[in-house]
Image (cartoon, rainbow, N blue to C red; front, side):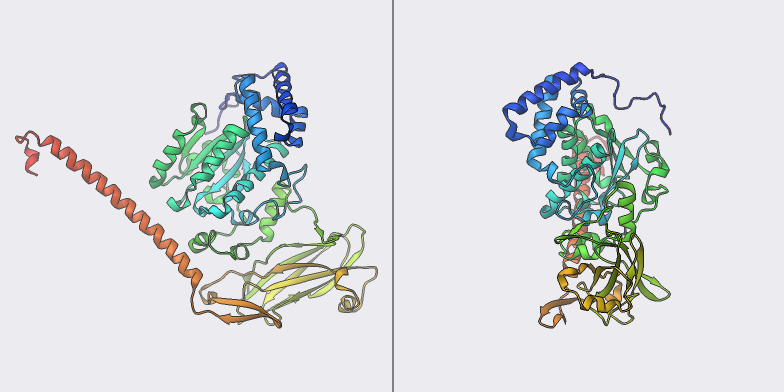
Length: 497
């Protein structure tokens, strides 16, 4: 059901902020900064001085109460300084994203997805609840990841508001992370003024209704009406079908792998999970085309990279005519217009073949390399490729001779892990150790990781069973209590039951 263009669901026109309001607000905030400059980041101070819209948001958020708006700004700007918002690598352009800034696994899992806009023009972020497991060790990383996207979508891309969609399809108690949910609500109530659109809870299981009702009761009264609960096609009242992913009934296909229950449970406990759920060309393309990530080349050591790879961290194999094949795109991104010579090596020559394994790439051109996993080879988590490249002035008849003549420091390199989907036949448990001869493999008898996953799954199922028993006991107690009260008069026929 489409809304009328005349609707004002967020009360934008209820309080119209004037230029005098903004001038008064800005004057008071800058006076505070002059007294306590150490509490504020210089970038945030510059924003208050130059960004009219940010100042207007603070004043509108507090309904033109300048004193309240100034207090909110003080609290917000101090929090930004303490949290390190301006140290997240968030500049005018965010192409330089790296693992030192945000936890890359969250980009690959598809649990927290920046997406398209709702009917009110608010930028949407979809939180797939069933894919999330609370992880105390990564709690701060999750918050940094959220702030990274809020900053980029709200301020860099100049979206008026943000709508959060909690897709609760197939979610359970183990999926609920009250700390992260309350953090989301807190930052829009206290730190990001006049920026929240809707909070949509989609396909909520009955077992979580009490939890969400409790969360909603903590929301200030003037924001409670932004909470929307909907099931199935009800979501189309707020977001067009063409602006929703296929797993929510929309038309947009997503690049993320559908994780198995075992993989979901492994996310907080498996130290090697980043190698199992890795970047693919489709995921890289999704973030680059929609949000400008991974668009530039990075520095490598003391010199700039002359080539880039997609994927850039690990391969994704697929079965084609009975063969396991992954594709690697190597692009010549040198800035001097020179041709590069490349070669591809692997630490598992018995396991993989690269076609072609060497060659030249002209400036701003790309080569598509087929990486073939040889049949009967059992892949390991340490399998990787080494892509090497050097600039050349003339095509070389013997590419490999070029590398033999150069010192290792003159060669540009990138390592990429080999990755393939595991099936039942491939799930033998192995460990590797480092020796003088390289990585040597030995079989382990105990499937430690699988045991931990099975234990977590059993605990989840046991908790659900206990919840059902508790509910049944509560109903029985209420029935007995009602029966007792009604039977105080023994003439009643039901007292004989």
